[in-house]
Every structure is written in structure tokens, then in C-alpha cells.
Image (cartoon, rainbow, N blue to C red; front, side, top):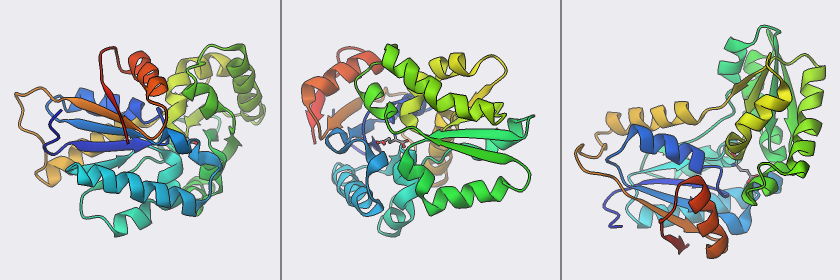
Length: 262
Ligand code: DGL
């Protein structure tokens, strides 16, 4: 794919593909360059310094390929260090935060549950987000340290995944949550299973569509949208094993896409 000026999108692994898919829906003419930093996944048990170093490395690669904007399609990276990344970049940097605000608007029980990585829930940025709403709604958090590994392995329907989901969701239901935020882009691939485990009275909130709309808004503001009429292409890079990534892309994006080493 000739990367004229693609939209760069990255995550620690495949979770950000759920965001890339929504960007593709809204922007069919734009080229997309996706990076899965799979060799360093999960980010959710790493330090802020380590995550920032990876964000800088991946962003440098994307900018070197001519990216006109960078989407940090990862709640963990966004909440850990997006401010530092923005401070050193001249292109628009769009991040992903847990959808606490839409969940607060949707809840009737006044209890919102948030599933996210341990790191996301420890960040100042997440604490500040939760604090904005905690006077009116109880924000109950649940770290899910083992879920990303299951998703990276495409074990969506495994018994072990179901056991983990029950273990993570039950405490939120016991506290009265009627709305559950998917605070990690990987969890989007388990949204249906999470809804089944949580039961019919519980709403699931995810942010990939809102993030894609924000990408469109930012690119339009900056005059950076691709000319309509052409068909955008995608290129997929990984810092991990190519064969594994090839199977992930086949399953989640569709067959026939080439994958490249970072
Ligand atoms: N998909 C990511 C997120 O939204 C990262 C998960 C991880 O690597 O721990 O947080």
C-alpha cells in the first residue's frame, strides 16, 4: 500500500482494530496504517514510563510513514501518557478513554461498573474522570488482568474466558451496576459475551464509535480528510509474531490482508 498520508492507529495488540473498523466505516477513502505492539502486550501491567516509551516508538514509526494523525486506540496508553505524547507531536493525537460519561447518563440505578486494565484504573487521569461524576453516581471499578491474553489468543468462547467474565462482572452486579463500561478496546470483542453474563437489565457502553466520530471531526477541522471517490487501503504491522498476527487479522478484519513486521 502506498502510504501517502494514512491515519495511524495503534494499540498494544488487536483491541484497537475495533476502533480501526469504525474509522474505516466512517472514512472509506482514507488509508489506515495499524500497529499492534504485540511483543509488549499487555500494557495493562506495565509502568507509565514503559508505556510512554512504547507510545513514542510506535508514533515515531507512524509519523515516519507519513501519518497525518495518530489514534491511540488503547485506554491504558491514553490514560497513562497521552498528554506527554501530545506535547511532542505536531499531528492530531486522538485517544480513547473509558466511557464513564455516557454510562453516567444512561444508568438508572446510579451505579456504573467499569471493566479495565489494572494500569488504567490506577492512573490519575482515570481517577480524575471518575471523580467528575462520583458525587451523583457510584463508579465501581473492576481490574481484569487476565482478559487481554485470552482475547489476543482469540479465545472468545473458551470456558476459561467465561469463568473470567463471571469473576469480573459478578462484583459489579452485586454492587447494583446496571451499566458496564468496556474500558479497554480489547473487550469490545467480548461485548456480546459480557452482555450475556451481565444479563438483560444491564447496558454495555463502549466508545469505538464515538472515537471514530472524533477522528472524523479532528481531520475535518484540520482539512486532512482524504478526497472522496477513492477506496482507502489498510496496512497492518506488528512488533510480535507475524504468523500469529496474520491469523488475528484474518479473523477480525477479514482474509487476504498482508501483515508486516514493525
Ligand atoms: N486495548 C488496550 C486498552 O484499551 C490495552 C490492553 C493491554 O494491553 O493491557 O487498554
